[in-house]
Image (cartoon, rainbow, N blue to C red):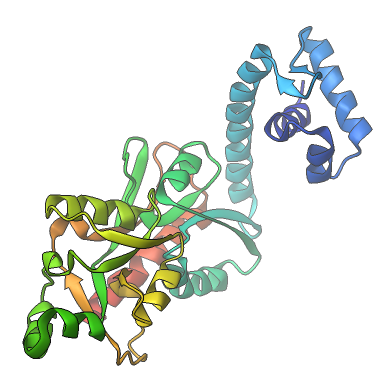
Length: 312
């Protein structure tokens, strides 16, 4: 048994399709099948059932768990050896929240690339829960996202705390407050009272998204059962529809462009502590971090510390 055998086995076990696994590994289907048979003969046990369709046996499931750990340790070893050699070429596996990447990455990646011009950045986007899991299993080196929900085994360094804004079209303000609209706009510009909009239509992100979870808890605490007329996984979709007056959306303050002019909507901050979103750079505790990954973390932290000083 060698590392190639294990890599071939893991690929087939994950795809449960020899053809797809062979394409992913750039080997022939016959060669891959032979390697799996060779591994089964070596272990003297069946790892897959072939009919009616390819599936893992109990032994195969057991081997898959161990194989992933072995390959992860092997990759860590290779990363460390590469650092010892010259640290000039390599790859960093970067996980990033798909909603925050466009804000977090533009100032960080160019600085990293300037220091490591020959490094490849493998960008993996997803929600916080998915990124946490990949980080713990060694599939990602470092994550830029919300602070992990489960901190065990993960080290996080805070980058920035972001407020959520209620995006309210002026037509809703006029309908609700009439002659008092300007007064209420001034009042809500400091801190919005969510209960004032309890009967308005809402455009929210789908359940499972961190912002949606924060808003569900916040509205529940304020005894609001919102009239949700649309759910989407895309923050920008909800925002664009709110600009057209379809409903009220929730939008991260850090997403707002200072150069853009929005004449038809107001942005009212939600100042409750429980709705604040903390963005962080996270990595797995006890796992070897290459010099490149360490420098990426330092660049990310320094970038946002400098931003904080400028804002002050």
